[in-house]
Image (cartoon, rainbow over all chains, first blue to last red; front, side):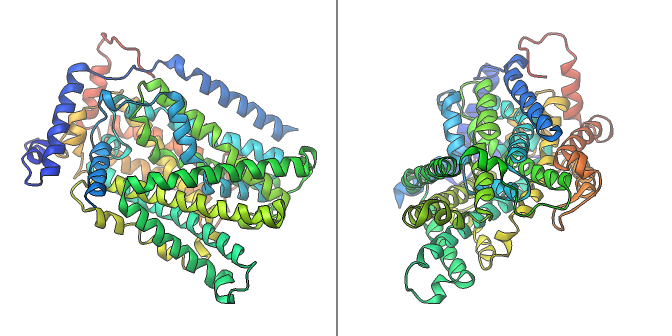
Length: 67
Length: 476
């Protein structure tokens, strides 16, 4: 890439708010990379309920339009 | 002012940084309650009102339920992205639009929010004028042409002052506004059902249908599809703070896809009963003078709170995208709403506005879903989302695949339906416009990112996805 690292650059900012925020950002990204993810991942089966509900709504819509 | 500045800085940092484990405070029910509180607003009521002008109660119910739930089903998987990485919408969209592209998308969101703010404030201005029409104040204050813009602009100034003070002042205001709109909706619903009876409501015919039924129905459906897709830029705001991806997905589906429909259905039924889509006309017609006046006060408070929430959302998001901008400069971006309050032209064109949103957000929805699930295969570099000289720079900060997708999606949407002139092609009456535009932009993005403008970040993701070891079974 060759361009300057935006995060590193802002960690050296003269604005104390930006400097502190980007340092915190750097630590959080490091934590995330070490733990992979902090939340439980979703499975396809978790989406079944919403798909069924939309199926029922679509059936109701078809009923309304056909009768 | 020190305390207020510090709370603003805290909100900016909180919105900008990826949520840490300690920030993940919401379960599914918390998120449902928050998003329903935000979602039930004058925008839902007006969408329902325009639906009730074109189709009867049964058809309206079908158009509303499907029009909200199906677009949400199409875009809700993106909440998994926000929940997994703990990032806000405009940071997350950098992977699909590019760093500059995500900034441009923010300005689209800002225009949309300015429109919503103007609609809420104009409705509040109308409610005040209606209230004052019961007094003997000068005609200047009680006439729609002069009084409504005047009070709407005054309310804008109040909303501006409250938002400028930051989250502490806003939270106090929410304690008045959110219950106000909830009481109003429940009250109206009870009065309509008990006063009219369900059979009578089902037999009512719409006041302003098109000449043929399929045109009326599809236009009503398109308005609701617009509302469904319009939640896209708001999906990251709270999904990033949940404890699990499942909670973000389910809560967003149930809140924006199902529960906010209460307000939309109420808008449609009331319009059928009263025969006008103007909510300020409903109060006296349905509740009588005294309860009607209380209803108008609640409507004013609810809309003022909605405007404050929208304004804050726009300003805090700007600070997330441009953290170095000052709070005052960020606040000044809300000023264009005043120009939309000078006359009723914009407010009366709400149906065109919501279909323009359907056009923009359906295409954007197709792009972000295609990028995260099908091109990047759920593999995103959190570091590069924040390092704006990183992997998602594409071509000068813009992803050419997103541009290609927008162009093709635009041709499809406008070929099917012109939202500004309300001109529909023959095909629109069978397939509508927003939903086909979503699928076209999704497929276009996929083909473009995989085979035409395939950047190393897209190729890397596909290569990694074919590697056999993967401990977590991800969605798709």
